[in-house]
Length: 223
Image 1 (cartoon, rainbow, N blue to C red):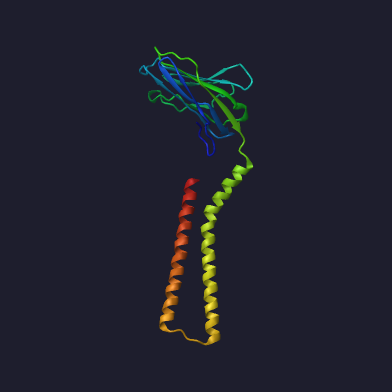
Image 2: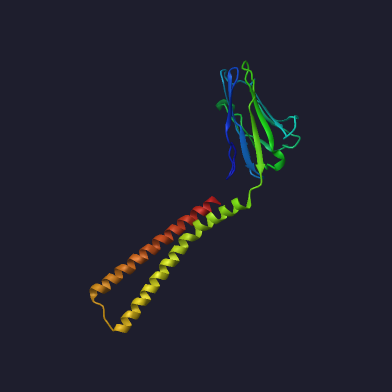
């Protein structure tokens, strides 16, 4: 799995080992500059001790060369050299069977195969699962759609209020013109009906304004 507005693993791989069961996403997609989580969980027949070790390795596309990027044994030891220097973080918990890591500031050069190996003596490992990571640039269409959605959520309520106010003004103006031309004087009942109608319009307008304020508040809290 991964950490980002629009990324996620596709599929998974289960590998029964001798006393250990691994679960790791088979495919993970991420975006340049957005932190990615590589999930690896395990179940062991033995209790977790300080002998438990976790090793993450990386293999570039179309290459047989593997690179150690993370080691764990009681403490975390992310790589201090190579492509992933200072970009690997531990986000797991061995006592919960979680051996996950994250990659910060990913680039297109990070595409490749990642493997997670857990040893918890006397359990041993076999058929270590792998994750294929694909990092891409966020498309202009994706960013545009996000901006458009936020714009609609923020400005649509305000537009509804404006339309309601305009309709009310037009209706009021038309009513005044009709009364002026006919010279007709409304009865107390008609005046009361008009007042109720105006109060209903005002109530609807205030309700729309309140909705707009709530949406604006949610938008500000998100950012």
